[in-house]
Image (cartoon, rainbow, N blue to C red; front, side, top):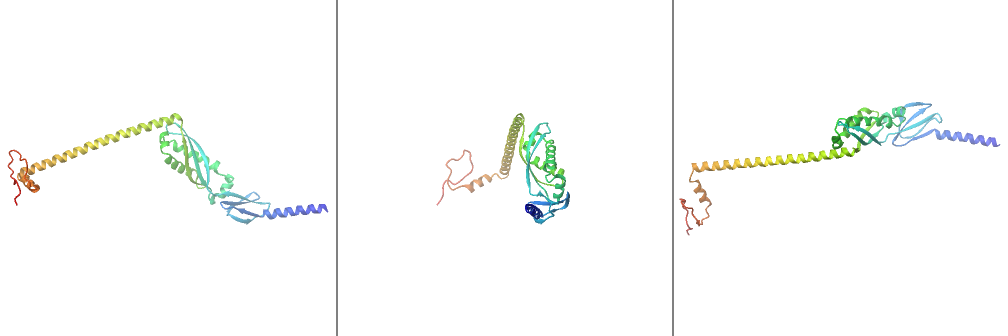
Length: 259
């Protein structure tokens, strides 16, 4: 009697396990791959509910959502200064690469595929610039490193972006770069003042030349028409006799208004 009850429980356990093991669910943001007796399917499974053969079939899952990982790269500049760069790598696994990533990288390609290539690309880019340029052109460094890393990774993965979080220099190097930047700013100020002084001088020369030319033209006009001055004075006369007449003047104006 007891043996029959135990046998019934064993059978029920296997039946329940078979029922539970015959279904699977692939969550949103994941893709599944069917593995039967160690043989991996060449096609991925879309999110949703499905059936599988219990005990001999497994469903392996791969996350295809964007992921973010941190990377540290120890680099050397073109002037042989050591620089430590902290980056964030934004990447994702495209659907077309799900099976390959699972077969070749056990579903986690970051450490063996992305990490070394991002570090290598960053080192190659920084080796072309001085330490001061690296500090001042972080965005350019980021763009160049991202392009180089994408080329190295290929189409298996999608590198969405690189974010440079920190560029660490030695204290001595930071002070030297800061002093150099101050010197450059002072030199630029001096050049600006020289250019401004030159511009002011040129403006004064142009004005003086224009004034001299105007005087010359007026003088030539007076020589050709000596009565021009009298005509201008008559045009501007307000009808009031002048209080003072210069000695030797031969310009006759009415002394008072007539009614």
